[in-house]
Length: 410
Figure: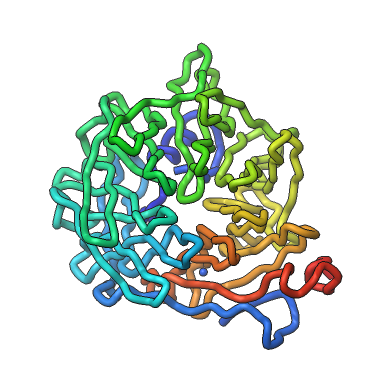
């Protein structure tokens, strides 16, 4: 199991209650259209000190196969200025956070108290409009702590009240807005996972959706990177006490709306929200296939599938991550019939879907975040299992016009 950035607690929780493989929370260019001067470009992003070796295996606290932490570079968030936040694993298998400036400079940082052993250290995930990178640290005991780092080099570590201190327990920061509010999750000493909101003044509150009653331990995760608006709306996924999995929308006033897509049998998860209040996410149908959806601010649901996505159980559209920008353009991943992960972009005007792979991707392409210009960042694994970041820039339908063949999906 590849572990960099994936929300392992969510995997464990859903495995215990259903066959749900949904992990939405907690990348040679292969476009499906004819090339032209306006075609998107994909460049590889490698942090200067990123390792190129075999990575590290550590024991899985949830049972099952050991967790694999590959060496390499792993971008997660991109803001509208083009700055990117993420992390890299060095040749000694230690993790470090980074901020990549719009000019291409890598600024690396390590949080106080971060461990220095294999798969320990600092991981950046989301980035704010002001360039603040948030994520987590692993200490020497593999416990997790929330982290925020600034471009000026200040790194602050924090823990949600009630967070556990054993391996893979603790606090993870997952999204941050311009005001400095942060949302994420923490795992307590009993292994239960909760959502939290950290105010700009540092106050942390637990924000779990209502879970009802039943035999199952509830859990809640805001999603990763683009899940907290400037107004303060938050989206994610939660499991109720009856063992059912739902998406959620938490309003700035603290009211919760449960999100269930019709036809969802294996669960629904929200994985991104934009300033207009449009939500992107995924659900699992009766055949175990992953499907994508958009939820408008008024609650209207639009379903979609990548045409080349697999139709077997565990395959389909939006397997791990998806993001939606201010215009409503969506990026995410899909799994084909050969169990290979690829990237896609869904245009906001006509719903046209373009698929892509990063040059050199052998272990799959994983887009994670897009910005207002529809620049996309994420990562891929090469033939040696080393991670590389990518940045995809270029085409927008609004530049080409509504009537272009590509924007109509032709």
